[in-house]
Image (cartoon, rainbow, N blue to C red; front, top):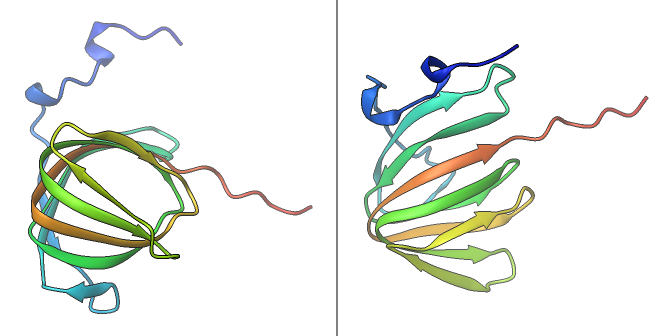
Length: 126
């Protein structure tokens, strides 16, 4: 099926709702950060999503089943893996978190990022 110019998703022309939430108690480590997601695009197969995420200061456990590209627009965070190795990310940093990553995410100062997520299909044993 051929796509046309009207099929392009231009974030600034969308009226995408912003969903705000706080983390579940079982994920939270420190603080009670208010977070928001504005998911501007979801593919028909629901495996590919693009949007904007924001969070106040705090830390929580993460477990990624998806691949996530991140472009930090504001603030800074520390991402720590399950072995205790960490990476500080800040405004201007761009990176990919691989599916299977387990660790923690700590927002040091209000963080805003563009995310691009791809959720691979689960393989079924036949």
